[in-house]
Image (tube, rainbow, N blue to C red):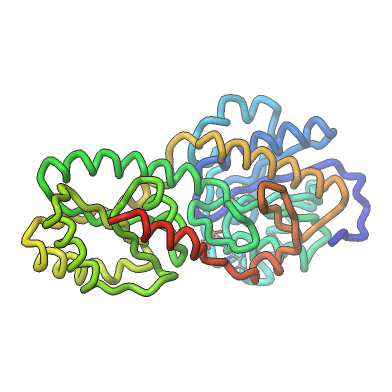
Length: 329
Ligand code: ADP
């Protein structure tokens, strides 16, 4: 919602918070440059809300974002702190902005970071906008978050390499991918990478049936099998390894790609998405809007109330899951 405040101050701060994701720098770059073009003084906050609390705020120049569009991580660094939830800490952090006459803030991060957006929105006259930056793609109000596409491409690259070695040894690989409670990275990469099985938090799992099916596949002449296991179901890892080994009599390897999925040069899609979202965020700031989250739906940019965005249910793509099951094995 628009705040009834004097929007004459052309000062804007930007921070990245929570888990880093590839494309955050493209987002920072676009926001800095677009805002400068609109006449804003732009400030960077280091280490997310930690820097807001510690007054680690610096003025950015046009050149501060030179040569970063292709880089992973975040040039502003990121951080996590539970301190920000304390009302007195929140107020002190907000004061660090307002004492510089900064009344506009863009936060790039995931759902935890968006709760901070709402806290600032409710407790200050700072106009604050959230941009979804997380590899997990676990925010239901937006089709995609910045970093998801790059993380999937990293998984696909690993899958290709793993396929070479397991085919050479007639083995089975359980490839564990990130995503917290969301199975999107697992689902999309299993389809795009030709994995034989995918195990997700959103769908029922029958480990015995998978073990029997893997054996059948080898009996029919398969030379390798990849089972993509979403982080949200890694409780099944041991049982899966034991049962598949018992049914096939073959070596079962497990690899968790872990933080490798977070880094690396952002994909074209992530860079473009990040740049578009940054521009929308600056436009919202320009209109005096606050407490809004930028997203993308069906290819179009959207923005909505940040609390609505946080409460928006994440829809499981059942159709894609069915496709994964029909074209694999
Ligand atoms: P992400 O934003 O990627 O989901 P986290 O869930 O770790 O990552 O949240 C990032 C950070 O957001 C937290 O460590 C904390 O510093 C900050 N934050 C600010 N306000 C809140 C809040 N009300 N609830 C939770 N996290 C908050």
